[in-house]
Length: 295
Image 1 (tube, rainbow, N blue to C red):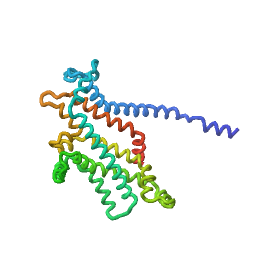
Image 2: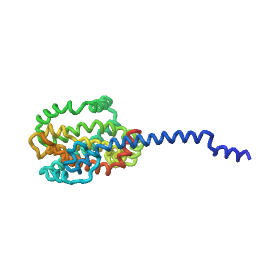
Image 3: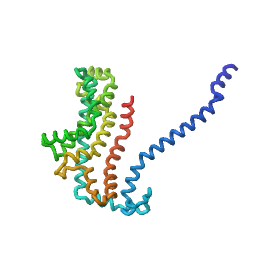
Image 4: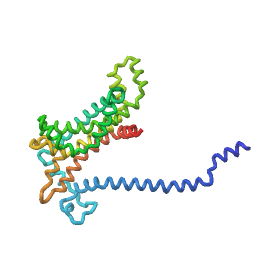
């Protein structure tokens, strides 16, 4: 009898359980409502960009804009794709962003492994310098980089866009991947050596797959910053317009008197599509990579 009573007392909810759940429920609803509101605020500029790309020119220039259109048009996209060098700009952006992503991932992986696994002089100083490099604004280095590119003869080439973005992507990538490399137990490396694996085999066949989520996370940031770059493209590509990137295509639609806002929004929408595709391809590993970074 006493055992039955004890079991019943354990399963029976306390007198304040209903009140506590009722209190928690409004808090949960408020948190969900705040999340939805923040998401709507963040997504509204993207919605307005896509909407303006489909709006007729008369509705875009209207003094009373509305967040919808009853007569969508593809004229703005037609003007974008009719630009003579738009395809070349797109391929240049793809080449520059792809090179920066691949090169920064490989170099950051090797550098992070060296910093995390080997002990050498000035290692802590080097890590601090990585953080300091992230604090320097890009605008402050544009003019020195311009003279550097001029001295090495890289102006008006895609190399002048690849090298600065690679330099700006590496400190963040190395610092982030260092945590992933340190999270791999050293016992795993010792066991691999006992089994006859060389350091190179351990590096690429064991360690590389384990830190791949971190590489994906850093690659997303590298891709976005390089793909959307306008400052370096405007500063380093002066006369060789065939080497311009996609953000430079937006200048075609700006006129001193009547800018073609429909063309600007359509070109911006086209620029966003590769970023979305990249996110869709890596979003699973991106989530796990950011989670590992937090840990």
